[in-house]
Image (cartoon, rainbow, N blue to C red; front, side, top):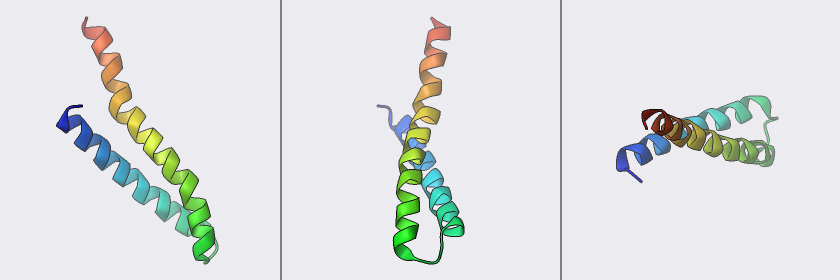
Length: 66
């Protein structure tokens, strides 16, 4: 892994995680357990989405170069 690509992945993951927790805090009732239960699936989705955004585009551009 290149460090530039990994740093892009990390920053994208952190941004999407922040948005996921913020969305869960707005939607969920004011209960810490419910906030955690709403946040966990969104955090998993955020990490998968960050992976697709970061590494998914680079594999399609490699095929076009060759």
